[in-house]
Length: 198
Image (cartoon, rainbow, N blue to C red; front, side, top):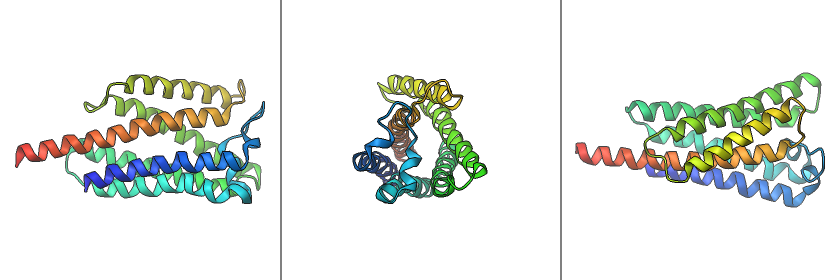
């Protein structure tokens, strides 16, 4: 079951990257300009709405399913389950709020708050996953990239920079690596513990 959970997480993150690349290929104008928009622009246009939905919907769904598959009484596994559920929920809320954020200012503000909460969760979660005993060599560099992305995102949100898409890709990409590594490490460590106690 835990191996399936790790596979679900990996497929969800691969889906995120793959379908986001499809969005950019279909409509590069949204993100390759001086004052670039965010990836949510892809959710409100007919040409890119389907791949955008898959880019966020797949990791949301598969992360939620992975959380259910972990089902372990170990405290670390329980915390990881809660983390995956929170991540899944924020992805789903980001996706749902995308479709309506352009209707009025209040809905736009809700979308911005949900998006900011997602980046904060990814950054805090990335730091937490790096502290797990199962982190890999090279995860320190990935964490540094995540933290740089977070700082750039904060500067973009307050209006100093205008690189929203870049910050979303940098934080989301670095987080994806740390999440896959942490899930695989949790699965390996729980299988080792299970065989040692058996």
